[in-house]
Every structure is written in C-alpha cells, then in structure tokens.
Length: 420
Image 1 (cartoon, rainbow, N blue to C red):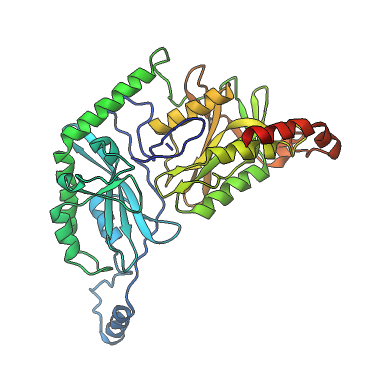
Image 2: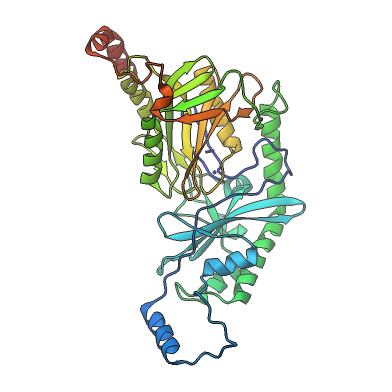
C-alpha cells in the first residue's frame, strides 16, 4: 500500500497492491489509516546546543517559569496540529503518520513524511494514498508525469510511481526555512490548510477515481458473495490452525529487517494436513526485485526456481501455501490490490491461500490470514502456533536422506529443466 497508492509485487500474474485502503467496504465508507512506526527525532546543531547550555548555566530561572523538557521538532508540532502521533522509521531518517481530509463528502487519505536529515531537499512530503496519485490522475508509471505541476503535485523520486503535494503556498513556506529549522505554528497551520484546500480542489478527480474502483469491485463480485474479502470471526473448516516452523518465522523477520524500512515479502512453503497448514519454509523476494517504503515487487522467476530447490530437501514434498509481506506501521488488513494478489495465489493453490502481514509496532507482529476464496470468499484468522515443537508427531521437518534423493533424481532433473 501489497497490495498504499502503492504498487506491490506480482507472482502468478501481474498483481499490484495498495498499502492503505478500505478492503471489503463500499465506496464512501471511511476506514482510518493506521500508519505507524516513529519516535520523535530531530538533530540540533552543536552551536545551538552550546548556546542553550550557556544560557541555562548562567540564567536564573524564576520559580514561576517552567523549563521545557525538550526542544519540539517539526514532527511534534505537526502532530499537535493534526492530533496525530508521528513515529520514527527504523532507519531514523524521518517521521511519518497517516492523516485523512474530507471534502464533498469523500475522504482523501495521505501519508505525511517529515525528513530528519539536515540536508533534505524536501523536508516534508504529503503523499495521497487513497485514492493514490495514479488513481486520481491516471498517468503512466513508466513515463514522466508531465502535467504534474498543473495539479500541484510532483513525482516522488524516492517512491517511483507516486506523487506528493507541491503547491505554490507550500513551496513558499518551505523556502522560508533552512534545512533542519523548526517552522512557526502559523506556517504549520497554513501548510495544513493548504492540504485541505488541495483536497477540496481535487474532489472531481477523487469522485471519478472512487467510482472506477467501485465499478471494478462490482465486476469482481459478480457471481460471488456480497461479503467477499470480509474479515470473519471464528474458524474455517478448511484451515483451523496454522503452524509455523522456527526457521520459517526467523526467515520472515530476518528478511524484513534486512530491507527495513522498505517493504518486502516472500512465499510460504509447507504441507496441508486436513485442516492444519504447516509452514515449513518462508522465502525472500528474490533477485530482480524493487523495494521502497510503500511498495515492492517480487521475482516470480526466482520463486519458480527456489520452490523445487527447497522442497527437495525434505522427506515430504512441500507445496505452495501462500505468501507474506511487510506492511508499514500497524496496518494489518489488505487493500483491494492485495485481495487480487491473494486471489491469484488461491487459484494457483486450489484450496484457498495463507497470507501473512508483518508489522513492527515496534516489536514484530505477524498477522496470519486464510482466504477461503472458493467458499465464503472471506478472510479468517486461524489459531497460530510458532515453533518446531508444534510439529511434534509429524515428519514434516525431517530432511530427505540419500536414498530418498536418489529415488527423486529424475523428478529433480525434470524440475530444473522446467524452470530453466
């Protein structure tokens, strides 16, 4: 947001994702963004620190004066005005939060990113996410958006395919300050007002984008339950329990941290035993991949190769169970494009699919869903057990011995040729 304003990855077919959406809801329904992940950080130059130190060493502070405990950052001030909490990226290069503005009875959701780098060319970016810039203006993500300035936006080089707001008033406010300087409250209020004015100005484009999305959803739901992609309580008889090996869980966490704060993901391999899905292995996204903070693309060819390579190591053949990917902040539900990606996996598997979402809030939080695509069409959250000890009584973690590998020789050779 796979599957905010943001493209994700593709496997089995060309699938995209949007990280922040209102999955399973009708157009006009408001679902708050939960974009999370930042503590307050701001650099203060050494001379300012020294100046503050000298003043506090020499000045006599009357009892009636309250000395502030810390210097407020730009993110602090924006957070107070917006009544939102800005949180720090794991890499410490910025602060961000999700906000929502309304105009003409329609919500526009944004991701606000404030850089903490002293030399940042753009100290603050307001990125439209639902609807996204692409959905609002219909530009090609593969070509420069030449008309961007006519709608007061600018292509985001850090997040290819996305745009951030850049009106004349916004530019004038930014130009008043040196990199790292904290703005006045009046300028912050004016900047926020400009976001509201832009939201109002883009109401026709937003209405059209939402209508197109609604039409696509209605087409998608033909012949299916009206509750498709809803989140149902209770269990599904096809998948009552998910068991994850220590190795699979560790692989997910390690891959996510290695790309932090960017998005990433992989596929899940294991064994289905009646109503229990055993996740033995979780992969990385591959080699020919793309990653940034709001979307990523995985390497389909790599996964087609690595699947049989991993599976042949075990006594029992592994099968494709689904996929996992990281989401920003606390967002642990799927977007419309996520739904389409999950559907493609379900069709490939033939029995529904697992789809895991990983968040750092700040500790790792893994939300495990099962999509009953051919049944209710809804998501379930089965019972989840993590650890090799929950594989007790099975031989699903047993590695293949030499005799088994020799017996599989022709199969392994055929699989290598098919992938090649």
